[in-house]
Image (cartoon, rainbow, N blue to C red; front, side, top):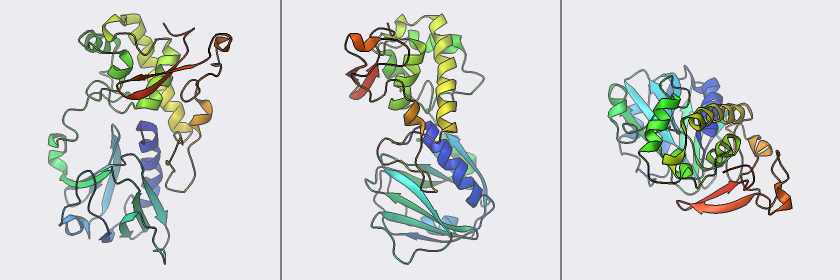
Length: 277
């Protein structure tokens, strides 16, 4: 599933084409997503101009000049394709087609776990999808004291706490493993056992890992591709994710068993048993 770096990459790429464009026509070929596409979807956005694109957590937001904002989540397999002209033959999973003054944008989603819904821009933060989200990783309010106080109240593994979108929003499974590795914190450690000093490291490496991932265009593990059809390349910089049995970059852990894999909260979790305590 696209996490913060992938959504940021998609947003940045789509902005080049979509910003300032007028949406002339919307064709909905499939309405059954995680949230069904409303019947008046096309009517609400046809004729509107795109005035900005932004990201909140793992959502891409498309602001229109008619007071509507599209809330877009890519689920497990959703992706955007851009074309200069409408293809003569559409893919089976090309579910929504936007014909704009700057080109064609296609939403493709094999599993249909994503969603795209219109919302009144003025009421955006009241939407159930967004209202309970925590701080963005680059929010000035994300301080070591803030994170420490939040973790002190959690009775779960710190890896699970990092995935809690009501604390820091946007971190997903891939990047949680990478952040904890760089922070030298065992993913199964209880959240309330994480020190204030370790919270300093967690915030530092959260920003560092996500910034590096954005620069690399995200991580392509399964289905993820950028709108231009290229893949992301941050998977080449992963230290522990999906590297069971291998040596991590910073020690000789392979002399024991190498990088280990456990399951926390139903999610695969990777760590170095030597460096992470």
